Image 1 (cartoon, rainbow, N blue to C red):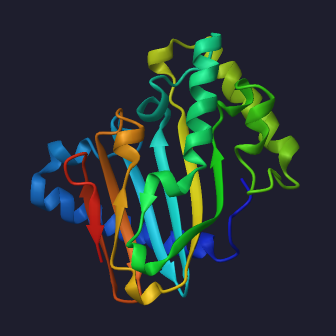
Image 2: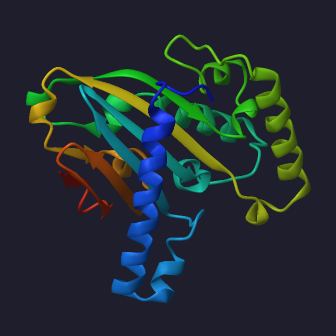
Length: 221
């Protein structure tokens, strides 16, 4: 997927370092058995990285596909294809999934969604991994080859043995970033299969991490 902003890779790399620190703190606080549930690709659990840079907010979401569409195999029926296509379309609408304080005047500037399952949703899926204009970038043949490999693997294995993720990146611009004091995540309402969301954030005021749930979907920073 084409990055949504030249500095997004660096920003999310910093957030990844924070995520490692949060894992250590979580393990010490809740014990090793609970920590295992936070390992990569744990159903019901997603990850969100947030970075505020100047007037821009960068968000990186990563979730098992099961949290968002209820399955992780290549869609085999028209219903499954439609479910996936609708989920990808909703994921691109960042303003429905993330709410910033109105005073900060934040607007979605760019969004992109990527999953190895996208090649099975039909022609409408072509824009899912691109920018707001539907452009996928120069590495499209490589991405398509990867999608074909994933689909082949999905067809050869039992659905319960297949793991597929859906990743999304967003860039918001805020007219008054000094008033950006928090974020409300609407992902739980849009995708009830998401039970917990591990958030790592970096802002000029500091950095930290928090775990969100349907009953506690907001973060203050």
